[in-house]
Image (cartoon, rainbow, N blue to C red; front, side, top):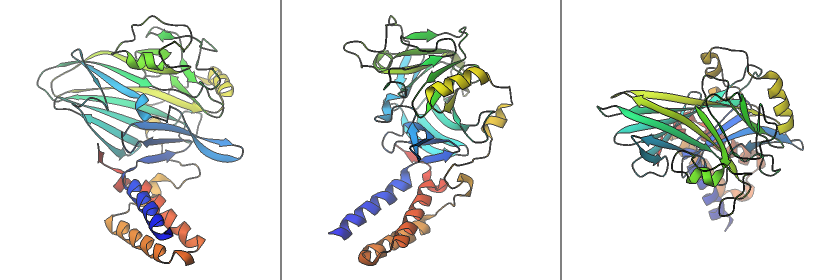
Length: 354
C-alpha cells in the first residue's frame, strides 16, 4: 500500500514542478497560482529562529487581487472575462502574466526591485502594458485591486506618511502630499511608494468587497472603518487607478507601481519616515540588479533541465518506490533536491496557458 501512495505523491510533485512558477530573489518571492495564474507576493521573515515566506497579499484566494480594464467604456476583469485567454511565463527579472483578446493584450509583469539602501531585492515593480491590435485608437483606463491583509489581525490596516493610523476609507488623488501607504504586519510589511516615477494616478483605501464590487471607479460614499453590514468584515484593500490614456492603432502604453517590503510595521514605518523619498537613481539600476537569493540557490545558477532529465528523474523515483524499504535518507534527499531544481528550472516554468 505504501508504494502506490508514494508513487502518486511523487508524481504529483513532478507534475506540479513542471507547471509552477515560483522564483525568489533576495528577501522577496513571486509565485503564481497553478489554476488561476494569479500572482502572489512574499517576504522572507524570521519567526522564532525559523525562516519562512510571509504572504503580503491575501493568499487564501489569489483571485481577490485583480486588474480591471476599461476600454472605450467596456469593463473587463482580467482572469474572469471570457474574452481574454490567460498565460504566464518566467522572464529575466520576474514573472509575466498575459491576458490576450482578439483586439488587445494586457501584460502584467512582476519584477524584483532593490531599494537604494539594500544590497538584495526587497521589493517589487508591478508593470502593466496594454497593446492595441486594431487599426483604430483605444481609450483605456486601468484599475488594480490589491488585497492587502497584513494589518487586519491587529485592526491596524494602513499607515501613510501623514496619517500614522488609517482607520477610515480614504482617497489619495494625484495632488496628494502623501509619500507612501503601508500595510503593516507583525513580521512583514508592504509599502506602496508614491514618490516614484512609477506610481498610480489615484489610490483608494477601502473595504475590500465594496472596492471589488464597484464596476470601475469607487464612487460610493466613503465609510468609517473597514466594516459594514452586508459587506466584508474588518477587510481592507488598495485600489490603484490610472487615468484615461489613448492607445494609437497598433500601439501600446505602459504603467507601473513600486512596492517596498520591510519588517514589523512599527519599525518599518519609522524607517520610512526617516529614509523616504529615496535618493534618485536611474531606473535601469533598479530593475537590472543581479539576482541574489537568501538561503536559496542563485536563480542565475539554476540548471535548465530538459525532457531527458525529467525522464531520468521519473525512472529514479520508480526505482526508489520499488526499493522503498531500503531507501536511505540521503537517497531521498537527493531526489527531493532534483525535484526542487526542476521546479526552479526556467526552461520548464514557461510558458503556461489557462
